[in-house]
Length: 270
Length: 293
Image (cartoon, rainbow over all chains, first blue to last red; front, side, top):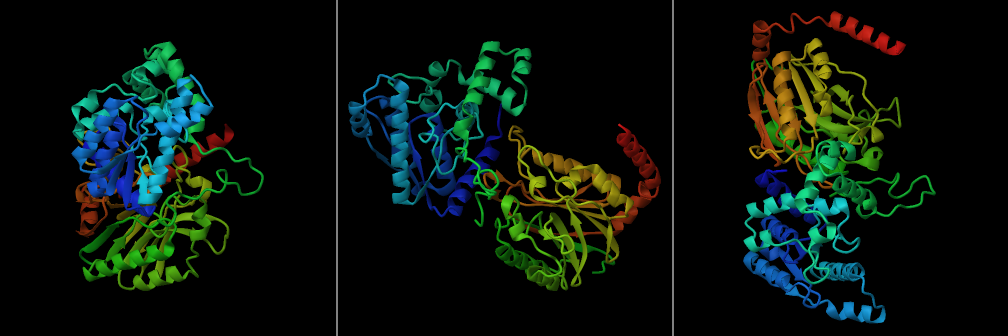
């Protein structure tokens, strides 16, 4: 569970710097929510390329997460990076006024994709590589919006569990308020991830490490003493969300099909 | 090259450009020039140093035929000034369409030996056997007054490989590598946990083979994978005599003393007492029994 923070910092800052340069970007851009993941990512980015080369976008919807906005602004000020706040309410409200729904998840997904859309627009304007902030816990259980907050140019933290991101955050000295804050996707006021998922991140990570890193079966994890209902639920979340972790399948017709047997590396010639 | 007393070994812990043999040739020639200036006798590059590692469908596109390749010709010319070990994708003229993850030892304008990787990792994050043909031999060969043997990355982790080189009389076991770093939970470590496995086997093999183990690993990133660096040399007594940093590019020259091989074999006669005929018989029996299963 514990990680070697100096080593991880070194590898991830190198990853951010090198992968951005290889893709021809001189800057990095991050959506800042005032939460732990985007804050840790911003700290890493500043260590990697320096504050003048990092840009933060704060993208609130109405007053759903005012605390998040003020913490995100605080992070921007501490790190000395340029940042901008864009209220996404007009476009979200315009859409839902024509297509009303009470479904929080539908609304949250739409907001996540609007934020993605603005990040990509700014990425092109500023010639800045978008840093993804999804962690391993979220990616494994599929707790994210496909083509929304999961969309990015590169993802430095996708192999760190949430609890490990917190450990890294302590090492990087991110503000205490952010370390202590209840994780929230900001889907509605006072929403917290842990209430919505029904497990704490500590519980989730304990189960995930056994299933994924230690390669135990669900039965073996249960025999090791973890609660059956929770283990089964996590295993099922992993299974059901595989589509979020892959490019969409291409129907194979020819001898050479993208994704099947047309297999070039991402870093080709870079 | 003839090394009567000591030899200077240069290790280029570098990061090739993925899929660009032309650029990598230039990088090799720059390191070679530097090593020649510093009077090194031998320079060693990592696994697939001419091509990069994560090639996938680029494998046929970056393959060289040693007899006809102009890139090889440039390196053969360079080998008149210094011995070279480097990694390439090899296509054999006599067996076209098969591609090997190979290591070449060039000396005096000639190819002294080409080793084709025998153990191709194909599980987890690795998929080498999907793209490469398997090599079939481990062979020690003469280089000046020494005998050397080449291994490529995973070959070193199978200790049977080094045994073949010991049986063949190798005093220099040269392993070139593109080993990714994995494992971040050891808080006391400067590098990845996986680096410790390489050091452990390097030390053990050098001691029990009474041979120098020279391990050249690469650095850099490909498709999100960080290569761990941490190249090293262990003496024939299992002592660490060179250690390059983890994760970052480095170039270093180490003087090694071939007389230590003689001394180690005199003091601990594992080589003298080796019984390859017994190993051969035992393996023959195992293989026959396996056939009967």
